[in-house]
Length: 148
Image 1 (cartoon, rainbow, N blue to C red):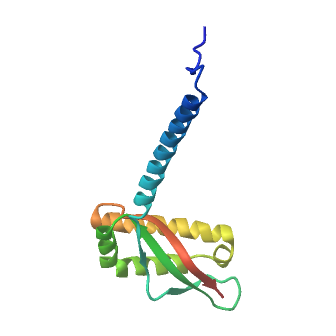
Image 2 (cartoon, rainbow, N blue to C red; image 1 turned 60 degrees about the horizontal axis):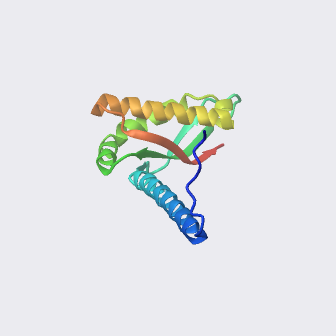
Image 3 (cartoon, rainbow, N blue to C red; image 1 turned 60 degrees about the vertical axis):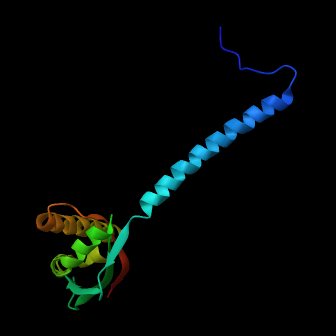
């Protein structure tokens, strides 16, 4: 025999109050979850390479091609940001070298750009792990990406 919901036979007001309390409790729980997710997301901070990274890429034709980009590294805390700032020359040099080795079709395609972004993220984390013994970058973004 299935359990029947509890209902008050002579009091519809009690049923509506009980339902309202359940809805309020569910909404309060949902707001707590959203608030904790927002506070976790608010802890991220970003390191932007200034000035932009500019380098040549491997061109298919006789003309020299170049790419100019602004890269932002997302880190989880201010202490991680300070460590990334300390290693900025190493990271800049490695990124310019890696991007300069890319072929023209990879630089100019959307799929290639995403592959380059992922590879740059892995490169940054491997260098930071070698220097600091932990992976400090949580993500990497191209906030400006121009090629010619």
